[in-house]
Amino acid sequence: MITDAFEQLEDEEGTRQGFCHIRIQQRTGRKTITTVQVRKVAMKSSVCTILLLLSLRVIGVFLVRTWFVPDEIFQSVEVAHYAVFGVGHLSWEWRHSLRSVIHPSIIALVYWLLHFLGIDSNFAIVFTPRFIHAILFAMSDLCFFDLAKRILSTLEARFALFSYTSCWFVWYCAPRTLSNSLETALSLIALKWYPFKSLNRLCWPYMTIGAMTILIRPTAILLWIPLGLWHLVRSQSRCRLILTTSLPAVLPILVIAFMLDSWAYGKWTLSTWNFAKFNVFEGGSSHFGAHPWHWFLSQGLPSTLTVQLIPIIGGVIAALLWRKVTLSLLNICLFYVIFHSCLAHKEHRFMLPVIPLLCIYAGHFFGVAVRISTGIVHALIALLIVVNVPTALYLGLYHQVGPMSASEFIANNAKMIYGINEHFNVLQLMPCYSMPQYCHLHELNCTVRALDCSPNLGNVANFVDEADLFHSDPIAFVESNIDLVNDADYIVVYKKTFSMEYNCNGTTVEHPEYGEVIQLTGDQRQHIKDFLCKVGIVKEENCKIHGF
Image 1: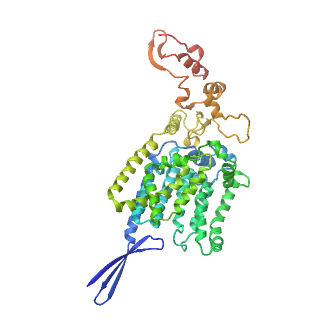
Image 2 (image 1 turned 120 degrees about the horizontal axis):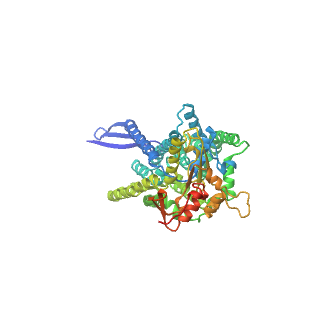
Image 3 (image 1 turned 90 degrees about the vertical axis):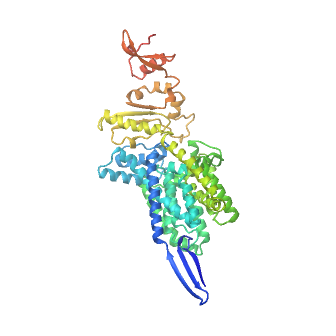
C-alpha cells in the first residue's frame, strides 16, 4: 500500500515557496520525497501582477485630472519649476523654511533632464511628475502585496490587494504630486524589509527609506517610531541593532537632508524640525482651519474608505477573536489617528498612509468569509466595485475640474494670441492657491497674480489677509485695485463671486440707430454698465442704457 502526502513549503516570513510530495510504501517503509519549487509559476504571476498594477496607476494619470488641494502644486511642481527655470511661485512656507526640499528636488531633477534634452513642453512639465508618482505608487502596490502575503495567506493577500486598489481615495491620490502620496508609497516600499516575524531579515533598507519618508513628510514619524520601537523590543541585541544597523542607515540621510535644506534656504536649518515646531508645538496648523477632535472618525475615514469599512471592521473583529493576524498594524493605525485627532487642522489626505494597513484586515475578513459563504464574498466584491468605480470616475474627471480646465484654456488661448514671447498677465481672484500657476504655463511669457493668504505670523491686530478681504466685498476690492484689474489680460474668478451683483440675460438684436447690439434684460442692467465702465472694458460715452 502506498500513501501520498503533500506539504506546503514556506520561507521564514511565511511566503509560499513550493510544496513537498512525500510517498511512503507502508510494507517496506521506503519513503520518496520530491520537492517542487514554484519559482517559474510565481515569476509569471509576479510579472502579470506588476503589469496589471502599473497599467492601473498609469491609466489613473489620465483619469484623475481634477483639482484637490494646493499642496499638490505649490509644495512640489511649482517649487521645482522655480528651481530649474527661475519662474514660479513660492508660498509662505518656503519663506519660513517649513518644507523639505527633497520632494521638489526629485521633480527638479526631472525638469532639468527634460530641459537638457529639449523636450520640456508644457505637456511634459505637467504630466511627467505625475507619471513618476504613478509608477512609484505601482511599485508600492506590489510591495503591499508582498507585505500582505507575509502576514496573511496567499488568498487573503489577494483580497487585501483588491480592497486596497479598489479604494476610490487611493486611486484619487496615487498619481498626484502630493507629499502624502509619496509618504504612502515610500512607507509601503520600506515595509518590504521590515522584520514582522524573522529578526534575522535584512532590515537596514526599511530604516533608510523610513527616515527619508519622515524627512519628506514629518508626520510619517507616527508610523515609523512605533515600528522601530517594536523591532527594538523584540531584538536580542538592542545595542548592536542601534549602533551597527540603525545609525549607519539613518545618519547619512539626516546629514544629506540637513545639507540640502541649509543650501536651499541659505542658512543652517532642518525643515523637519521647523515643520514640527510650527504645526505641532506652536499650534500653527490651526491657521489652515480647525476641526473637532472626532473629525477623522466621524468624517475623514468614513468618506475615504466608504464601503471598504465593512471588510476592514469585520477583519479587525476576526483578528481580535482568533488572533491569527497580528494586531500591531491596527495599534499603529490607532496611534496615528489619535495623534492626528489631537491637532486642530485635519484633512482627508492625512489618512492616506493608514489605508493600506487597514486593508490588511479587509483581506483577512474575506479569507474568513470565503470559508463561510462564497455568496457573501461575491456580494461584497460587487458592492466595493459598484461604490468605488463611479465615485473614482466622478471625482477624478468632473468634481472640481474647473481650475485645471481654466489653466488649460489660458495656456492654449494665450499661445495662439501671444505666442511664446509676448508678455501677458493673469489675475486669479479666487481663494488663494485655487489653481496652478507657472508650472502649467511653462512655455509662455506671463505674470500670474493671485490673492495672498499668508497667515498672521506677526500677530498683527485685526489682521485680514488679501483673499478674505476680496471675498468679504469683491466690488470694493475691484474698485480699490482697478489698475490691477485693468492690466490683466486674463481674469479668473468663480462665477458665484459676482453672480449677485453682475448677472443678467442678454440677446443680440438689431437696433434701428445703433445696428446690432446686445439687449440686456432685468433690473441689473445699470450694474452691468457701471462694472464695464469701471474695469475699463468700455468707455462711459459709448455705453448707454436704452429701453426697448
